[in-house]
Picture 1 (cartoon, rainbow, N blue to C red):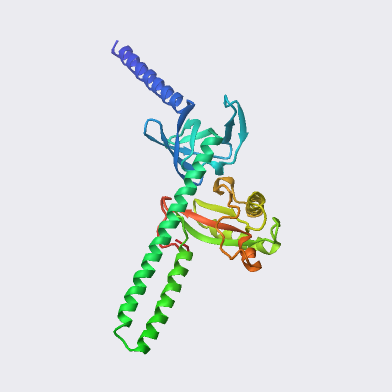
Picture 2 (picture 1 turned 135 degrees about the vertical axis):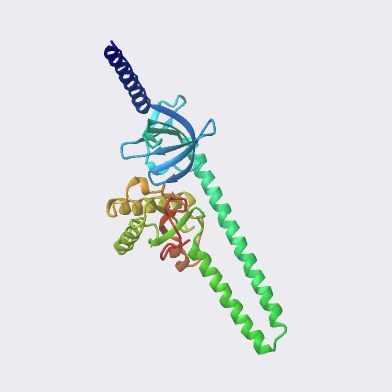
Length: 317
């Protein structure tokens, strides 16, 4: 009798364990939908803040379907690159949680309006950071110049001349360092390549292919790297045409990086078409116009990637 009782108890326990395992397996395989805003992106992983204020880590893969909804009833969809999943984008994700509590995304949906707002917000933040860095550098330059001038007043004319030369050298050094360190506070700039174009031209000169491949090879030595491509144009001609030229130039460079450099889509940031904005050369001269007809390709590394430690060898901050 005791033996039968033991058998019944063992059977009951086994049934409970089986039921528990079935429940856990079912929960893990259940399709989950979450809505929220992307707050960070590193390679194939992004973090979303949901509508209830919690954070969800979303894992993207090659089979993740990314589409932009359109129309009054959001019935039309347009296939999009994973590079459009940028911080600030409101979106909906459906997927299954893996054992690491990451939501493995089957699909991601967002509207064109949400994408435009996210891109505008990123551009505004970037411009603010650039202006703040510029103001800080200018204030530092002014402070250095004032200190040097006060010291020079106490010296003979020969010392004054020497101090003025040192001031000029310091200003040049500050300007060089500002350019070297870059303008994206959330990324380290590992390397960059500038591709120049002829007037009205969008085809990439073959001489730039090898420098672009070298950029890719350097980027691939770091986990979680990203490639940023931005196209520009001179102000010669109409603004609409220049916007189109900058877009085609950026796309052509992006195609070389993806096709010949084998950079995965998850590592490519959305190509930027900057038109005739941010002129670096004097557009009233032929040389200045040539400098402005460009694409800048950058290899970036997110500062927040786990396991990254400074200093990074030969990197740009």
